Length: 366
Image (tube, rainbow, N blue to C red; front, side, top):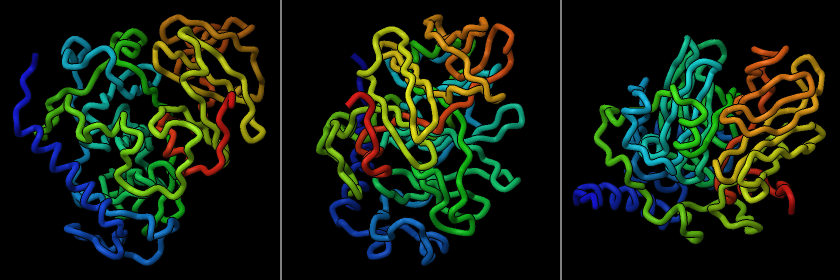
């Protein structure tokens, strides 16, 4: 049995104290900013979200340090990960990278770049949401940091070029020079480490050598993931149709959202055809492998193939023309090889967060 050093419990206790202190005051940052130094933009009068629902998380701006271009290692060197642990996978058609939640829990934002594509992996441990953000905004690359502010218990990143504040789940800028600008996103895959390395055996994975001393492997927030009553901050709407902490895959089509539960999928790859806000979508999931992905049914040329679900590692679909499509929507064989399906605006998160950000959203199969 592995021994845990006492200082690790101290770190966890301090984090919990920061958050609980802010929550128990039940005050927003514009009434009591605690120990934080609120930047000019954070204190600016114009926000497109209610000021009364923005809370000071406690650690302060950059108190949770984002990672910059972190070291990656081989699967063999990633032995610190257990097979059942969750990772967020990135794949660009050639290169695969796994970003473990046990590292993201402590950093929340990773600024990275691959083949001249600057991007950020944003992750909020309080809402369980991992979303890929492009870092080029209005033609200029930037990096993101953790502002220390919370809205609907969800991360508010800030961009370091303009100091504007952004809402992770709203996918837009909520304060500062870029207010109302929408962020461009890209597809990620949240799944178990075992599933990811089976799909992409040549993947790279983050090294524990991040340059920052954190007790990776220990979850910072106690029983938060499993305690339905444990919400560290208020939310605007508490939709109790599902358990608060149930992980669901949500799809957003022009501000209309719908969620899909893992229980709607079998222990083999399962396909669902659905219509969301007038758009035909296909959703493929596997409860055993712990993944759900979704795409628009139409190709970029406007044609609509007849898809059949398959279960061949990363290959999850085939069509009547003999094309095989992988979990990121790439055609890996057939006449369409090299083309890509159009992915939906979608990500996995705790049910309560979807209910808070997208009131009255539909739940598939309910």
